[in-house]
Image 1 (cartoon, rainbow, N blue to C red):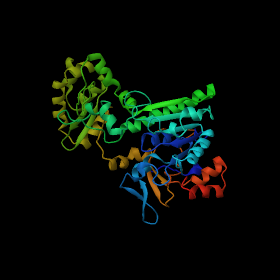
Image 2 (image 1 turned 90 degrees about the horizontal axis):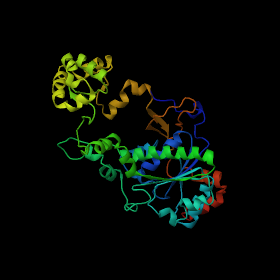
Image 3 (image 1 turned 90 degrees about the vertical axis):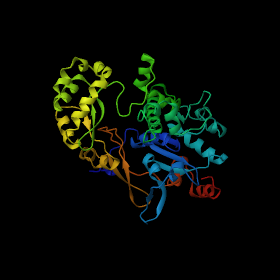
Image 4 (image 1 turned 30 degrees about the vertical axis):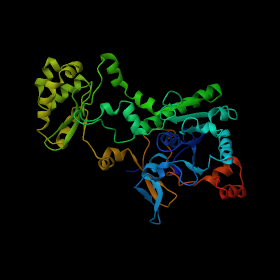
Length: 413
């Protein structure tokens, strides 16, 4: 079942009091600001007048409008920009810069992901805007951060998956280093950025002043090395690719079945004993070599083969309910179509349908955050390029239609 996304059915969002000025493109920045929009913030996305966000053209597939024509909006763009209002401003011009500065005066948060130093040349850096709005929270998202020897360099998610060590521990041990199937560095940086912004908003409530936030994609992907980094710090051994096995927990991997495969993720001794009982190998549960997590890890080479042999006795469809019945964490390996056909996923309403300016509804994936009193807001799909320019300039800056028409005629907006 899809969620009821009608605006009339939804109360004000948790962040409906916040005004966000979004000068980001591609994925990390838009992912952060989409989360804030889902929570009710008024997010104004600033785009280049002719082409807009780079990802509008990252297709196919592209959305097909009600007239049957292909729009300029790719699946990539639609995935990270719902709930926002789009305005087009040429910030390379003095008048465009003045418009952005005026909008920043009345904003709570500005998020940008330009190269280091670019916005300073335009007078739109934090120090310049803080002078006119001391309460402004200014979040910069870059590949390498604002300082250090690599700070001026460009980079995309793929680069940081490699530099951050993620690819070195992902993939088959006999194969090449492998990236994640999604742009995980971009996405997690967006999550960290939105968390930092909300922390800064709370601090401002106490202090009365905003602050600057420096987010680096490389920093973020290094941070999620988490226990693998600590494994190295404690042991001195460099973590290696282990395929679908786990570095610390055993058995915690994919097992082939008579038909299909199943994920078994044993996290404690009780689950291990339950697994042994379910597969008819009580002798493995009684073996002192495997009684503890540490023992199973040290002796994985002798433990995994008999478990793998036992799993071949049934199909994946048979094993999943058997293991679930004794509380052994397990599951099938779905493709994306199967994910959204799963009855639990359908019950949770993870697929959305949102109205788009082209006259059709667009699919979307729901935010995982669920707040009872201030639920996520899903009232519109990602905007078309410049869809809200006139409205925003009238509402926020008080420009009349003649002035807006003049700016359009000169290519400023």
